[in-house]
Length: 300
Length: 180
Image (cartoon, rainbow over all chains, first blue to last red):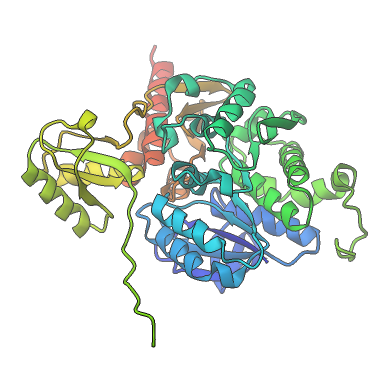
């Protein structure tokens, strides 16, 4: 099972766990319609499109309404703490939530009860909480942007609003230095996919790959294009690719979708997600060796 | 014989601290915040941070903006709110501006806000990771900079605070452009 957990900006949405599907411009979970916009919605949307293309099972999602007070976030944490061992997902991707260090600590403890350790992916505030609680090394993949990379490199910061200003001033070319600092502080996951003008794939301080093409600077302005990368890497990890390969393909596919969409800073993330099937059809076989005819399962 | 089960003690690690001059203010703050549903606890502040009294309230640092707003509404006296960890940097004040031609993107901390120079309409917000950010994204998109609800008024977290900083800078840029 691939499980995505995160909050949705609908105040009264209850805690829901179920398989996600698509209906027009909405995602549907247990009869509830969820917008495919910045945040967990965009991540789920990208993962769903990818799993559909690869003929994999649709992601299971654990979502709850939360507009900032943290109630839905805490419901998600508590549900996972109680149930994650029983669910034992192959991939667990944690996303938007109110960061809570104590609950993150309990969750990481509960994950140890899984029959097999899931591929553990964190983005957004789940990544902030993992770093702030000193648990980053227990995660397999973080997907920070350049500012969040500076946050991971700052040993004292518990949120990117409180990073050292000299680290904030650094540009994307300084990522190797920041990543080395983050690994030294034990503030990095096993693999980092750093999103920016240059995408870096970093494993234990080593730069495994950099991706710069196609160059679509507008993607940085479009809300949700970081979330789509996390959805893509989650899907390709679930497909069984090695994690660094999954990260490289995710970064390439996101850029290519931006190119296909002729993205401007005013483009919406749904327009990017809509391009993924065409991107996969044209490039995935060449990028990954994942080649199959329509109607055939990825796993043969 | 069944094992005796201890009730699990609720743990809390907030990473933020409200400091006071007076013990009574600390006790009142704890009650105000607990009544409003915030997870908090009374602690002794580290000696390096002590400002007056030897009692402080630990909060979830991420919730700093909404807690400040509530304490001001309730007229509770406090000295400061900030990180508990000694050595943490100051709250980021600087911003970066990226010109995309027709559009301008302002980055404040981990948040970005982009508007159309021609009409002052917000076309995108990006970055961040707290649960109020997707909500603010929906609230701000398509609105004029001058008519957008300030994230500091309707958001709750440090991500919202940074988005508010970006909005303020966008307003300054736009006003600068519109002046003769």
